[in-house]
Length: 408
Image (tube, rainbow, N blue to C red; front, top):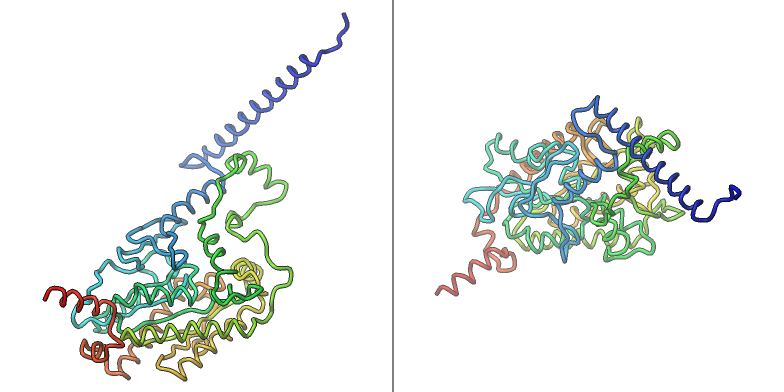
């Protein structure tokens, strides 16, 4: 009876081939891991798996917020990507301390985004606001500096945070270091003055809230090695990149974007002043480094989707001009660190964030700015100055008055 195979026989042979291939793949995977393990102290994992573990650990530092979109997870500390970061029980990247301000203490609150949070610092104590406090204390001022910066926040989130939590600290001086993150919603088309389109979703994505589980093959060293031979290494940070960007990026922001930024800044200043604080507006530098042009432009294109990265420094300077004009026509002071400081490329570890040298330098610059304000305006505000006018009484003071009235 001939050698003609039945359908059942063919299916059996196919199953044998598939099973054999799977067994060989498993043996190859185990062998690959074994070879790599010989030269390592830890059991090997793919770059994608390592990145996933680190990022999910870092995500423990953040939480969603009904008004701020994303916010600090109070009292949380993490170690990820070779760095340490934490938030106090009040939600600040600062030493643990209470809301109540000690008598005779000058409180300074530094608001902003990741450049204020100082995201590339090795640990909390290396951030420029933390260094500010150390230097001020070394110079004899009883100072507490609160780092209210949070990655991804724009002037809008800074304004909301100031209104709903920061003024409870009764800061004598509020520092606002902002502009770069506002380029993100400013470059979205059509422009949305509420910063919902082109910012809210991007901030959630960039922090990893929408991070999808790894595919099985992303955990395979064999697949990873084979892929590298064919198409080269893949940057794991691409998992956080937006899936799409506009075809024609803007080279100039619309006028309404600058008007909205000015509106937010003036509102921020007004709320701070009404809360009894003096305000320092700080211009922001941006540096596309000559030895890292391609990487820096790619970095900016990833974060500021709608803006040509080559145009980003000039457009940021337009925001800096807004800060200068607001300080000239209102009660805020100005620290023009973008226009009056000769920054060097070694001061930056990417086009937006400071290197350790740059962070230390920023701390010294801001200490000088704060001391100048205190000298010009007679030191920290006294309690009587704070409560002289009911319109500038802080939320905390009003709450104390209500409690006292209730007690009587």
